[in-house]
Image (cartoon, rainbow, N blue to C red; front, side):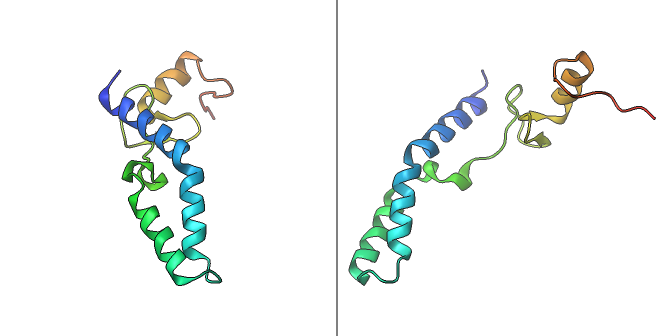
Length: 99
């Protein structure tokens, strides 16, 4: 496997594992009814979470080649691999258009 694919898998696992914790800290830091000191501590805890656990750090990559551009979300494949698989009939429900 390519290192980019492995890095993407690792990042996605980190996001899933830290999702609940980040949601709690974010809620506490944005809750205006709480004390300012508690909100500040929650903001500091949120900033101490690993950067790779942020959902915005995830980029869509092709699961076959690791390419980061031209990726279809539904199949998580780049356009070239999608075309090859569709022509071979490996993708259910995808037909070549003709008119």
